[in-house]
Length: 224
Image (cartoon, rainbow, N blue to C red):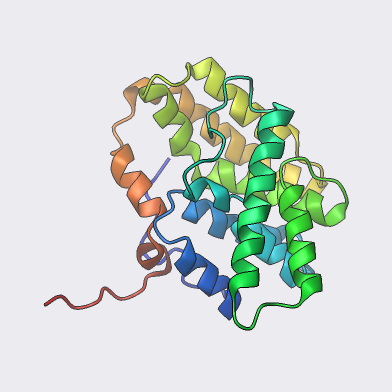
């Protein structure tokens, strides 16, 4: 478990539309997770379409906007009611943002992005399976700190938080992603097991995870 280095994602090679989406979601504590999900999608699926990449980059957008389902559900992390509510709300919010642009992307792009976001928790079809796998890999790599935070904040016990890590790795379908996930899973489990001894400033970790300027190494504007 570590702090991200400044500019860690400077070479993400985002499209102009993707960069605009990052500006839209700047300040979201899962911004790093979204960027890493897109990067994992390209790594495990080099032929990823623009729609797959964009869906990976925005799949959890709804959590940035108040009013959605709790990201710490009480009925289990595999609860279909939660997964469908979260995925549908994200798809609706991203679709609305795409349609609000001038000019808006073409209809086929919007519909394919929506379909992939709707399926990012459950997979189904090879593209959705890769979005789901990239989401899982990114969670294990960049959100190991959040399971520790859940324990420190008394939201879950270590055993309950471990269920999230187990669910995250067990749902992966592409074999290339399973291989990549195992060492990340083991590292996340070690961090979780040591949650009570954690010395990381988790509030600062959350702030860095949501800073577009920090993650991409953008210059700090002058003051005054």
